Length: 338
Image (cartoon, rainbow, N blue to C red; front, side, top):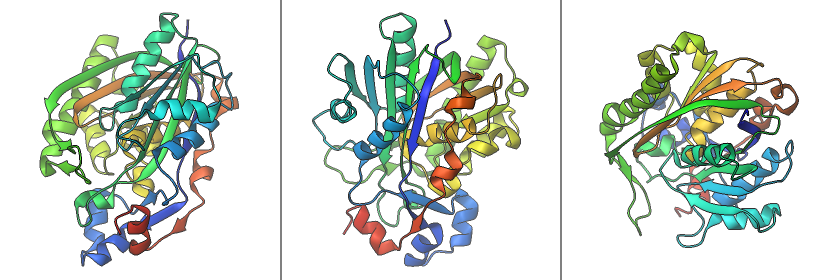
């Protein structure tokens, strides 16, 4: 039984703000910021968009090429529309999938949805579900003048997990977790806090290395046996560094590096890189995908592309090409900071 991604979709808002625009407001040298973060612009959800509306758009696309026999709906986000009230049930109602399904929202910073992917995989494999919809969506916020302001973006990614004609099968997975509080936001606090440089070596790099190296060892695989690799993208520099550290080439990760023009859409960020990669992947090719969530943990997957990708492929590049640039004042309005 081959279980994997039976359908997938994404949504990126049309609005963009350039790194140069944000830097000019604070009197910063944007060349230095772009060089350091490897981000030149990011996608921005408007004042009429939130994680739920974006999740709906991505889910509609994911369900285009698969039957709507959804037995589970899992919504991963850091920016839910309600503090108390599930977004998953609202999404299910919007999609018209009925009432006979398991629904829950998941939280684990930027890897909230990949944990749900593992749950969906297990439930389908054990015959408890026919198919599950997993959605990652965020309208990421950052305190004005914080370094996160240059990268925190907006977007949504959705995947159906089942055994009916998958575009990519899940061959193996592994997870690595610890209590490493590098990024957090307490109840009632508007903007998240982070540990600065602490978010790198003991957090992002340690956990992705842990999940990936254990997975490769267990499955007796080496980086050279993969056609593509995708890593969570808090910025444009980290995924390039972790790829090199683990033995992957720049050519293997190049198609996934969409953070440079879309920003870090938190739970959707790494998955957006996977969708970008699937635009180029061919049947039989192998993909390594590794998420990261502050707090902290990483989920790593071995995916094998099937011939179904040829009929279900999402035109990622075309979908993100339409964009409208906004100034900083409009950006603050969209983020409800003014």
